[in-house]
Amino acid sequence: MPPAPPPPPFPVPLERLREDAATGAVTDVIVALPDLQGRVQGSRLNPRDFTDRVLSQGFGACLYLLATDVEMESRPGYATDPWGGGLGDFSIVPDPGTLRYLPWDPGTALVLGDARDAEGRPVPVAPRQVLRAQLDRLAERGWHALAGTELEFLVFRDSYQEAFEADYRNLTTATRFNSDYALPEVTEIDPLMRRIRTAMERTGMTVESARGECHPGQYEIVFRYGDALRACDNHVVYKAGARALAAQAGAALTFMAKFDGGEGNSCHVHLSLRDGTGSPVFADDGSGRYGMSEHMEHFVAGQLACMRDFALLSAPNVNSFKRLSPQGYAPNTVSWGLDNRTCPVRVVGSGESARIEFRVPGGDANPYMAVAGIVAAGLYGIDHALPLPDPTPGDASAADLPRLPASLEEAVVAWESSEVALSCFGPDVVRHYAAAGRAELAAFSASVTDFELRRHFERG
Image: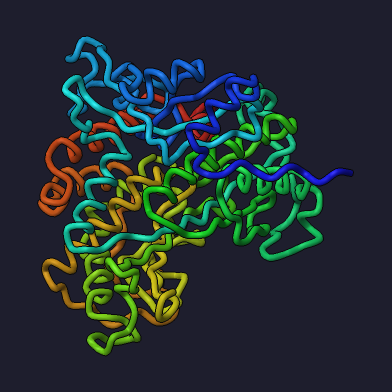
């Protein structure tokens, strides 16, 4: 078998795109942006039209893309109101640094962009812009963030169509047992996992590790950390591509935080800071305790101070809180620890690798919002020189500690009443994402669940 051709460079140079479009190797360019759920939404364009016009002028898309729930329904209350704006357009302005070819969609390139209004100003509630605003606050101090996301998902032998027709019940997981770190047990899904890993490498990502996880059919692929914005861009492309590759294999996978009573899907976020010279801000410089710099101490203290108020940014759905339960393998207290996975903030590494692992987000989290929350909380801790309590030893869930919000409703209330959220993100972002949370709550309240039917159909 001849060796596979080398992957294209990432980002793909515009001249390379023009050459490949001229030969017919590229026939479509998808111009897209991440929506409130972190999904990639956009349109397919002719490559020449993209390079000649859209690259400099942007491409129009309906304002409602940034004010809908997962069903693409737009309810009242959003700060950026699509109905009040006459369902007009905003522009997606491409970011050439995200241009890549899609191995699962031959002949297609994808570029992510930023939302701009009619005057060319950034739309502040767009997830990519929410994160940019927090990264700009870091840049004012001469710092930048490096991040990596560890995303888990469940794989099923059923196709998406079969799962839909079965109402997502009685599906067959691709493996049968807890396969955490196991090798033989995941052999059956290795071909699909290999296709996913290889495809992501060809889009410019670097796979660091891959393994089975606790729930039957569960898998985790970890990519090398990097610039925080690019890490989030890679995250949303990876989710879209993994779903497409599973569909092509006649399988299905889900990133939802809690599929059933078993282990949920996590999205642990590793984050560190660097200064203008590339030196680690968190490295032990003798100013702090526990092998941390004083800046890192305050950064971690900020996570604790803001964790309840910012929970909505990491747990945006009703289902998110099914995972954050005392019985789950996920944190439910406001705590930090040294290499302690029962805490939502796990401090690991030393020197250049000194970082926090933020363990609140599930697989359903929008990465831009989760990372924005981590950065904002850390800066709040640094700006106010918040003291760091002693680390929590042992099982944090069994300790007498403050708890994370127990429901989406509690998280929405904490978020929209938070003075810290208002000061860090501004009134429009606070209002917009509170409305997104309330839209999810309204949709859930209007549904009749299996629990209600089983409990009350005969006996109610």
